[in-house]
Amino acid sequence: MFDYRTFALRKLAGLAPKYLPFADVATEDVPLSRLLRLSLFQITVGMALVLLVGTLNRVMIVELEVPATLVAGMLALPLLFAPLRALIGHMSDSHVSALGLRRVPYIWKGTMYQFGGFAIMPFALLVLSQQGYAEGSPRWVGLWSAALAFLLVGAGGHMVQTVGLALATDLVPEEDHPKVVGLMYVMLLLGMVAAALIYGWALSSYSPGRLVQVIQGSAVVTIVLNLIAMWKQEARNRTRAEQMRQATPVRFRDALASFTATPGMLGLMVMIALGTFGFGMADVLLEPFGGQALGLSVSQTTKLTALLAGGTLLGFGFASVRLGKGHAAIPLGRVGALIGIPGFAAIILSSLSGNIPLFLAGTLATGLGAGLFGHATLTATIRNAPAGRVGLALGAWGAVQATSAGLGVALAGVVRDILVLRAGDVGLLPQTPYTIVFSMEIVFLAIAVLIAIPMSKRLA
Image: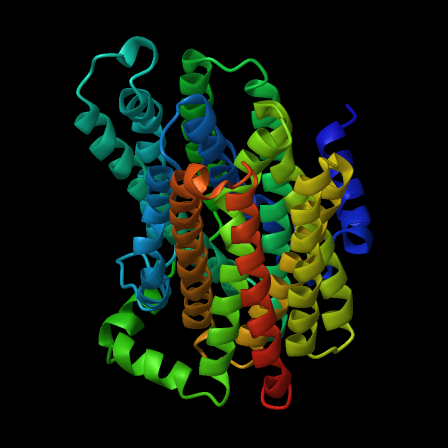
């Protein structure tokens, strides 16, 4: 009998090295099908990002009428765990278990945190907004329950992504670490594009009941895909477990000191923080801006996330080609930040003329710039990490990036709400609070570009 599944996998394996960035990292011992299966954890992380930052921030602000400051605060709660990514990566490097497993226990813990957060989130949001069947319920219950839900999803996502990327690097030779991490991030972006399209379709007819179905369906999909991703990825090794028991443990403080002592590493972290802050402030406002300034529907604004992620995917693809040819990473990151500047300028101009195509072009450009910037700085971090500290380097990069993105989201919401409250007093147009935030992002990206100029001589 003809095996269609084997035929399809062979076709995919044959096409992927040509069309999928970083796919040439696959070997006979670690085939592409195994790496793609492992990358399912990135699909669930991307799904969570789209739901929280893309879909829910629009629904909470517009449909549920929750103040943008409160929404931004909720979306920023996961950043409380972001600084712990470096610690999580270090702990998974040195984890001791009877079976010799290091990564899988942490991925499973993170998965359960995500599942629990999604399970309670929709009901908490409805109680918080006092809509639907939750009308009349104590609002403080919704507030604290929603905060717990966002914390659980954020903590789980940080843990799953950090340790999952470390597991991916365990499967390939050291020289291929940047490639396999790049492949994982390409799958993250593909997952974000697919999730944005699916959420846009599922919420085309919004109702409180549909919101519950979508979020709790995401909980089920998360646990199923992560289980498939983990299956037989990390071999049991009792010898390694015994060696780790007898070895002198490396303190996190010492490992972190070795990492930060690398020449130029602290400057790179500052550059990552500023650039991510610049790109990230738009995350909480882009879809509400499309709804309030340009009159786009929930379904249309949700698809903006797919456009943004698609631009980021293009940026990753272009970066993979350039970096694969030996191009220096820091100058490429500088180009990414430069592309973001006219992108945000186009978004600002679109609000003045009501030009939706210009708004879409600006969104695509900011995604392209973010992709170039993200992959270039990630590669620079891995290339310059001390020997044996790749897991810590991945955690540090993720910690700085996630913390900066979270702070950007929080600041954007606060600035928007303050300006909305003063709009009547000073005669601001409805789109002005948004355009002021977008202008701030241009300033942060310009500073990141200036910092990157002298760093090109210090880092690879």
